[in-house]
Length: 228
Image (cartoon, rainbow, N blue to C red; front, side, top):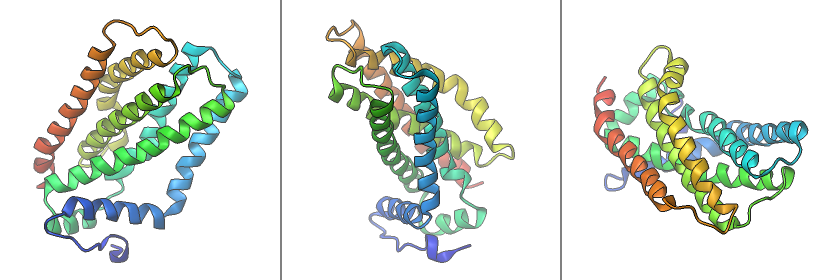
């Protein structure tokens, strides 16, 4: 185990921030991983541009969220899968299960915030800008990025204990993430028109409620995986 990469001093009163700092240091030292994600985002959107040009509003919206899904899988799902058994034993000795899983949830949410803003910027440059209310869509994109990151971080924590990690994530993630994507697509249509559809805020609150549920499940269930 590379102690230089993970041996970050732990403040007993702020272990979550120390673990987030550890993940940030790893991302900055292993820059090829972060640059690989950036390249994946740019190349995927560029291929869509070559094949479709500048699509209409509904297609643009759907493509954005589908690409966000694959970006999240590549950027977030590796968080637990990349941790070796030796590293997990080291973290077990210096931090609690709740602190560890919360640090992963927060760090991956911040990472997806950056990826969502980057994806939106490249989308508007290559595929046009049919959005009438840019700040509204930016807020929805940030909320959607956080929601996707929470779900896949939780799934990655479960799949990390299984032998067939990638297959298990796909099996568990499909029935969970499809309804979430449908809600995000429905909510984001509010940024393309001045008319706000009925029930929009109920959908937003539903999405926030799902995020809170995922966080609660991660805090409750991860300690059992942590002891394994």
